[in-house]
Length: 269
Length: 340
Image (cartoon, rainbow over all chains, first blue to last red; front, side, top):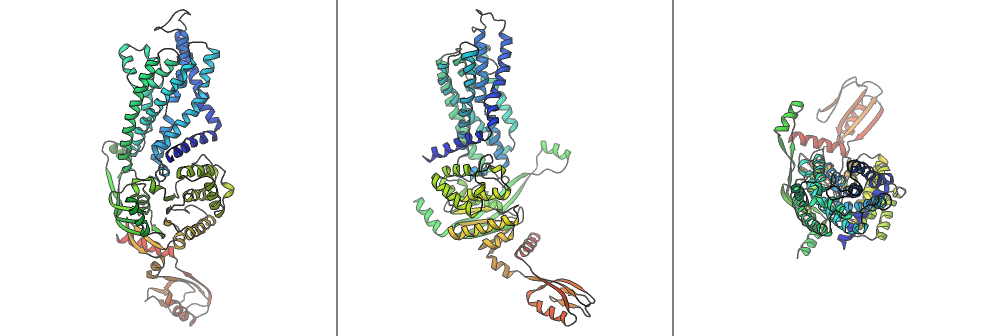
């Protein structure tokens, strides 16, 4: 009971903090992904404009690509965790982690609750944009009835993404400054998620590798599912893979935490 | 069985530490660009014994003042006992728990205030922070509100409860931090510089509040402060730390009694002195012809010195200053530091 009460309180904190800065929330949840989506859709529009109405590229029509680009920009932002990772790293570097260490709280749970709550809030706001555009402005293959299952996969992916962040953050006890690791890691993951291009366009060998990594669950699989590029079987396979990796990364994170916390010097206090 | 042990422990001692020590590893970089480049490839580390193996017992309900210069080891001791950091040697039990295991049952019973760090959330109001803390500690919202109002009234800060923390002044923030650390009625309270950087009025308010709180709720308090008035007013036991070791453990009164207390006499005479006046076995003297004097003498020599002067001339102005606790502590720590 106290576990849920504490973590719900942390989740609530994320919302309260976001509501303190209304304009920042609007920019973060709506404006930024809209700008990204505009750029990506424009790029894809230029690339696929040569495809005629009845033609296809790699088995998919122009509308498929435009809808993929539209959803990918929004879903990729949900899966990104640089903000909380930076914040957690900063807490260790500056010593503000003391606030959590001296209270009946777990650093892992406290930030996981905040991270998930923040993602739920921003997703609720931002996903309405592609849903509206796909429904009213650019008709195409988007199937909104597939959105709930895609969201379940994204949710599982978020837990794994957070666990990877937690592993990086634990490095802060040894290296102090980890911001460059966070950036490099996020760029690497970004290449594997399928935000840049639909993974099915890649050569077969590359496609097989990318689909066997859990990162495709961040963009390609859920977006591909919503926009009709892949079926439920791939979503379920991806979900299983992400859950296994979430377990593995969670375990590594906890072991690393137990080892690293012994090195902590209570910075700045 | 373990619970029983914890209870029996807590009936006698709040803290028991044996050979508790901590060594920090730090990168030592000589000055200059060349040294930076060299350090990039070959890093020289230095090991600093921030706290030498320390054995210590503290009874429940006592207020212990921890005093030392910057880097003496007092905050390291506080961090070890509060469970923030792990020791490199020795053991400790606080309320029957090994603090650095950070068991929930321990963290619920202790509170800490780090004067140089915000412990409430910067972007939200203190009232929201307290509500969150209430949920973390399992206190009902009604109890949180009444406890907050009770403490805020005593600290005279009820008006600021609903203002974003970042918009409050340092003194107001510190009062909020105190409320946050006392919300769950901790049995043991670690206060690290609770009055640092505050003006005299705020210092006094906090000092008086802590005195009243300690009297009413009887928690065990471990207090560090650079303001000796905090220690003199609040602590019933004094621990002086120098270079990682405890160099004095006793009462404030006891410390003052063993100190060689001096009184400072500042005088202006109506006429120049016709003969020299000496005190303290010749340690202090006023020369022939002097019209002003500023000397420190032992308390039992004051009347003899004044009598000697009045035999020669009249005193136009006289000021007698008692050497205070702060001066004695500084002198003691400086001599300890030189000795080690």
